[in-house]
Amino acid sequence: MSNEHNPKQQPNYDHESAPEQAAISPQKALVTVAIVVLIAGALAGYGILRRHQAGKVLAQTTSELAAPTVIVATPKAGAPLSSFVLPGNVTAYTDSPIYARTSGYLTRWYYDIGAKVRKGDLLAEIATPEVDQQLAQAQADLNTAQANANNARIQAERYTGLVASNAVSRQDTDTFVNQAAAMAAAVKSAQANVERLRELQSFEKVYAPFDGVVTARNVDTGQLIDPGAGKELFRLQAIQTLRVYANLPQAFSANVKRGSTIDLTFAEHPGKIYQGTLVRTADAIDPASRTLLVEIDVNNSAGELLPGSLAQVHFKTPPAGPTYIVPAAALIFRKEGLRVGVVNGSVAHLITVVIGEDDGANVQIVTGLGPAEQVIQDPPDSLIEGETVRVVSPSSQTNTGGK
Image (cartoon, rainbow, N blue to C red; front, top):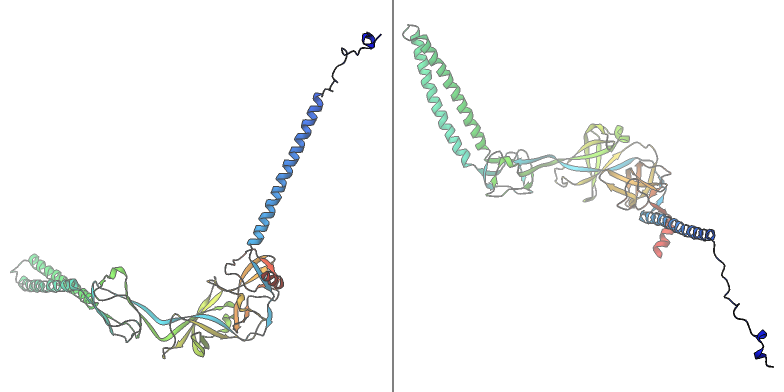
């Protein structure tokens, strides 16, 4: 018989089923979620920390790049000081603005800038028709007051003579005497008004108050002149003798004596030395700059020197204290005075110095510097006190420039 008809050998598919999948418990799911959250938090924290560190590095790098790069060197020892040079401001011995004292129109001027005038020379004329009419009116009022006063005096004298014989009353006599006194006072008032207007009329002519040179003319013919506006008509300067003012450091204030001769040099007169006389000092140290203001008078009868110029004042002093040599490029010119930049750590400081000899390339520092100072060789113009700087050596600066 065929096997097809044997039911025992037929495969039994009724009892076959798909493989069973293992079920995940809730505890395992929570653990898995917690692990994922921890990993994500760690990654986020790491990213934030990296960004914070990158920001700090960027800020530090930016600050370092923003700080100016400077080269420093210690100053060289110089020879003992025997003289030093200070800048001096040259001014006219007398400097006077000329104003008008009356109102009107300028009819004519006689001197322009650069003209040398003598005391009493006529500078300009002003037409004042209103003042002229007021003076005429005041003179007429004076004549009237004088006539009234004369009439009152006669009446008072007549009544005074008659009162002795009882021809007039004492009361009438006193009245006329008082009227005569009042009229006499009115005459004095009118006379004072006339004198006032005559003085104003005299201001029509503007005269030079001293010998000098006209350095400014600010009016022209036909211009309205108003004394209340404070407009300067002319400026007159006496330049026969010039005043030179210099600020002497406190350390040398005891070495200057009134009457001593001081040498002066000017850039516009190279190689020529002028001599002045120290005539006075302020007799007080300026607490802001710790300097003593001194005045030196110099003869300018030849007219070679000009007020407003800058002089180099050469002071002699007994040798005392060490001096130091620095490049001229290390000097910083500020309104507070001459300064030098030094570096302490990475912070720049500006110190006030006084220079002695100057050969153009190097200058002698008299006071303000020490032997161990790190002097900035070529400071930037924008350098300020307390600024952070980046110090480099000359060799590294050269290599950087070569790149």
